[in-house]
Length: 205
Image (tube, rainbow, N blue to C red; front, side, top):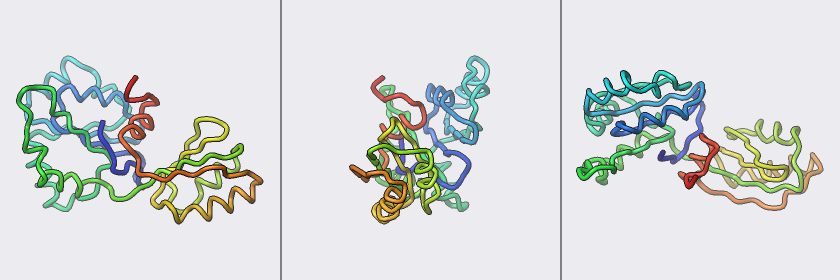
C-alpha cells in the first residue's frame, strides 16, 4: 500500500485509492468496516476476472468500488467535478511488468495525487512511565486527535491534525494523571506506519 500523506480524517474510515488494480484487488482483504477501497482499472476483463474467479472484493469488510478507464484521466475528470482531498491513501500498483505506465509517474500526475490526498497529519509517538485507560481516553478527547493506539504499557501513538501544538496539552494531561512523559517524537506517518496501522503486520513480514 501507499500512503499518506495522511490517513485519518473525519470520515468513518479510510478512503483508499488503488491505481492499476490487477492483483492489487487482494488489498481489499485488509479492509475494515467503514473503509472504502476504490480501484482504478483500465482493462474491463480484469474486473470480470476479479469478480468471477476471486472473492477478495465481495468478501472485503470494506466498501469496494471499481472505476474503469485510465486512472489519470479518471482522476482529472473527478478533480474537475470538485472531488479533491478525498483520499487518505493512494497505492500505485503499476510496477510488476515490463510496460510500466510512465504517465502515472510524472510530476503532473504527482500533482493530481497531491490534490486528491487529505492534507496534513502528524504521528506523535509518546513514551510514558506507564499509561492508563483514563489517560488514553483524555488523549483521544483532545481537539485534532484522530486516533490513539498503544503497543505496550508505556508506548502510545497519537494520530492527529496537529503536532507540536498538542504537546503542552499532552503534558498537562500526563501531569494531572500523575504519569511521567519520558519521550516524544513527532513525524508524518510513513508507508510503514500505515501498513502496520491497517494490517498489524510489518512490510517486511
